[in-house]
Image (cartoon, rainbow, N blue to C red; front, side, top):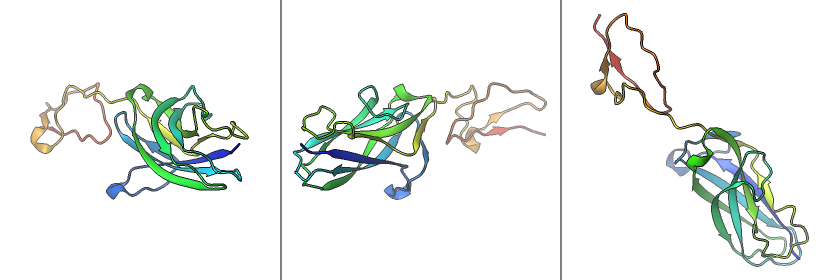
Length: 174
């Protein structure tokens, strides 16, 4: 039997595709998240090839109840060997409105006979915040000066929404 252990880090997508480890990443549904995974074979025997499952967990315990977001084929590992890979996945809309731990689970279908099946899952130390999608307010599209909406002075406006990455422009004559 072999023993496979995983290590997982969540990396925000930075400009030019570089990655910087952080404690908390925010990604909107439909956005990309990058995960860096190291799989270790703790055995003195080589492992056959297997799959690694990328999952989102609300409780931080990576198991079959978590939301699977990607599967990565993993090559065989030599005795005491390791492999590191990065994987991007799209955040599903079904996970919006929660904070998750990203995790990996090596050999999720138990194809490898292992000394221990309890060390195959590992959650990231940081979290992934997935806010609810933002719905535009009644003044959209007003994302630049040319699209600015005219407002009357001394008017109270309510029910405006501020969406991440969205600029809103208004104009009035004084």
